[in-house]
Image (cartoon, rainbow over all chains, first blue to last red; front, top):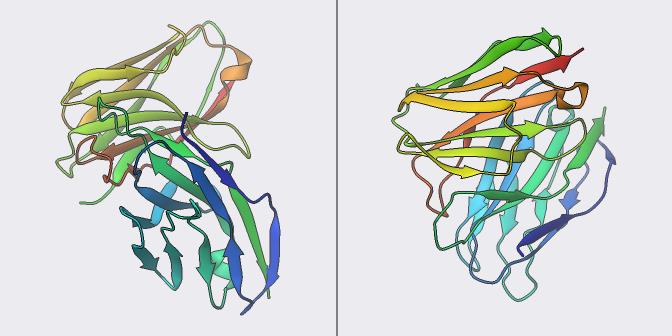
Length: 115
Length: 114
């Protein structure tokens, strides 16, 4: 079945460092791909999305490109801030014929940014 | 209004209690979801409602009973829970269940079962 694999955390960076969080997926068709972020004590928020190959999603300085050839959707940011400390989830949409809307999440990567 | 509101934020209950979690959205979304999230884990889908009809039940035990009274409200009724049911319960909504739809999540209800 469909699945998402994320790099294990925690990832600890200094402020203004470059961030990459790897995400690869397995899917039989052409899923939509998402990055969600969860700040401490909160629910998940959409960070960015891409719905077809070569699409680049971007938001708040974060970017990810839908790479069909490598089945990847890596999250990047050029200069992280302390406020970016959170758990990041890569996800893909279910492509069942019933159009279920089900999201398949990766395990999550905790990012800690130190001043 | 672009929010999903969940109440209560925290709930402590005994194994013989009956309680309910509530979720409300006013974005005109026609799909609503319940997820369960354990600490340091991704959310796990429990139920999906599409146009007020239950479309997915991920083999959830019957001690969890969902209800969708109208297109804006989603409830989760809890009865005879076990300590291992303690978790963060997240409600979400989306325009519909198409594959490109974005889910908007509430802040969650943190449940502790004693």
